[in-house]
Image 1 (cartoon, rainbow, N blue to C red):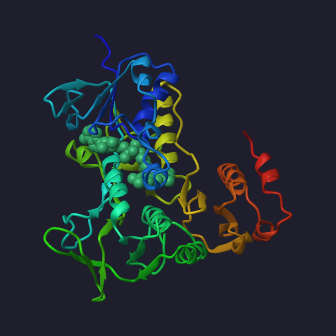
Image 2: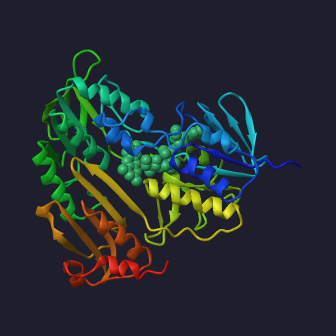
Image 3: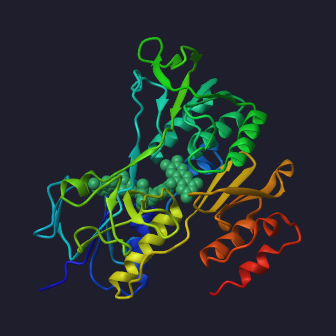
Length: 411
Ligand code: FAD
């Protein structure tokens, strides 16, 4: 019987990398990559950065050149969603009624935006950002809007806020928590970015939530907050987090819990199906129990890991998580996860706008956050990835050579 090959659902960062890595690892059987988006597969990070600022056009976004797919015998089906998975027959059904059989199925379905409970989200001028289409509409809206309200002071909200201030728009950031990026960074780093955004000219409203969006006709005109105050607005971007896109997996009876549950080798509760990237909840050795990460590094490294396993060279997935965010002239890079940190120290001086914070758990360095210090970040990735450590005194000592410690890590 001829091989059915690998079917990959979702052609984002994880799905495209999985197809590429399978070929690089010598996989010769059919590969079908199914995307419910019409565009050629593209990068998401620039959507809230260079593309939004108008510094990059559509031609800069594709993950791979168009010939890549045919050249590598990857059957890319664009604009088709997978509607269901028949695990018994090992086949998926598409929106066009077609069916594709698989030997192995990789779910890389990403995530969808979390919707706050508020009235008026459907109004013209209210936006969420996940896709190229969303970014194009926000970019156009920023040209004419004057009063921007961003709901959510996470990475994406702050990146958009920095762009809006770069365009000299009145910008208010509404955040239910008491500090920006509160789930992801140290209190020191939150404080630094709060001051930086205020210096850019944005205004924060902490500890308040979105109640409703109102305005004339169907258009946005004002934003009502939970403390009873009202902000005038002609463009609103809501960025309050994402939910794993695990509905297809759940409907197929796969174990799901805030994402598709996978084991250390990224296999789901059905060994013929793997899940990677934003949609996968996995046992991360740098985390605590099952976690889900929302980053390019995670999607790409998990894709590589699954491809290696299908090529017969599988090993537990153990890559160190790392992230980045560009906000105005500030490049934030994070190596490791800030879980259970009991001591933070600063390396360098935040007043210079180039410094790092190092987080320790029980005396062991587990996370390094760097602002405009890419050398610290690169060294930290090797140090933490190899589970080397340093003392808090060493971390703050400008004469302590991080790079030398990094170079001592086994390759
Ligand atoms: P995605 O890239 O989201 O791809 C999933 C794809 O699957 C989507 O195209 C989706 O439409 C498709 N799909 C879903 N269901 C189906 C179905 N049933 N059938 C067919 N197709 C389906 N990460 C960083 O590390 N650094 C950053 O600076 C950064 N900036 C970001 C900025 C923005 C605006 C956004 C939205 C994300 C950003 N991220 C960043 C996060 C990063 O883009 C994601 O973590 C990454 O894209 C995850 O890859 P993925 O393959 O898991 O999912």
